[in-house]
Image (cartoon, rainbow, N blue to C red):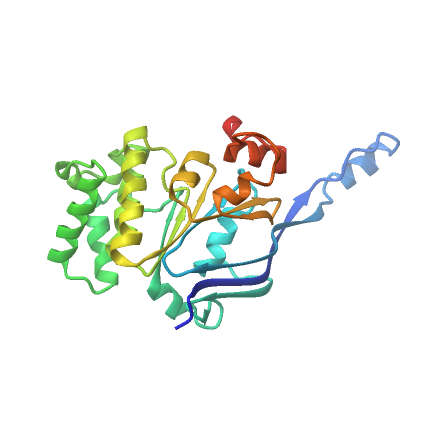
Length: 277
C-alpha cells in the first residue's frame, strides 16, 4: 500500500457568482431600470490548482482565513463536491469514480455540522451507528466514552440537539465522526465555538486518535496555536492557492524575523490578520 493516504494533483474548483452591473448615471431612467435586471457572472476560484500529499501517520493542517478555500478543499476530498479539473485520490481511490469506497474510509467534522435537531444527542449517534452497521449497544458505549473525554455529561445525551449549546453540538459532531473509527478523519475547524478547556480536550483527543488508531487527520483551522500544537505539516492557503507548505519550523524560517511565530509568518505572507475574524 502506498504511504500516501491523500493525494491531490492540480485540483481546481470554481463557482459562479452573479453580480449586478454598476450604475451608469449617463443612461436614461429606462435604460438604468432595464440594466438593473441584468446580472453578470463572476467566476470565483475557490480552489486554484492545488497539489499536495498526506502520508500515513500525519496530522496535516490547512491554515487560512475565512473564504480562503480550505472548507471547499475538505468537501472535495470528502466527495461532497466534484473537482472541475485535476484529481483527488484517497488510499488510491479516485473520489469521483470510487466515491462510495472513499466514503467508507472517511468521516468529517465541520463547523456547520447537521443533525436531526428534535432528536437527542444519543438518538443522532445511534442513527449514525446503524448506517455503519455498528450495534446499538456498542455505539452507546463508545459514544459515552468519547463524549466523557470531551467533558460532555452523560445525562445530557437524552436532551434534544436544539436544546444544546453550539459548543456541545460540536462535541456531538466529533463523537459522531469518531464513532465509525475512520481511517481518514477530515476536521473542518473542529474547535470553533468551544471554550478553552473543551478546545484543549478535543486537541488531545485528536492526538490520541492519530497515535492509538493509526488514523490520518486532515485539519483546517484559523487557530495558529492549534496548528502549531497538532500538525506535522502545515499549508497556508490564500485565495484558493497554497502559498507555503512545510513543518512549522520550516514555515517560520521563511521570514527574517527573530523568534517569529506562525502568526507572523501568516500575516507577512497573506497580509491578513486572523485574530480580527
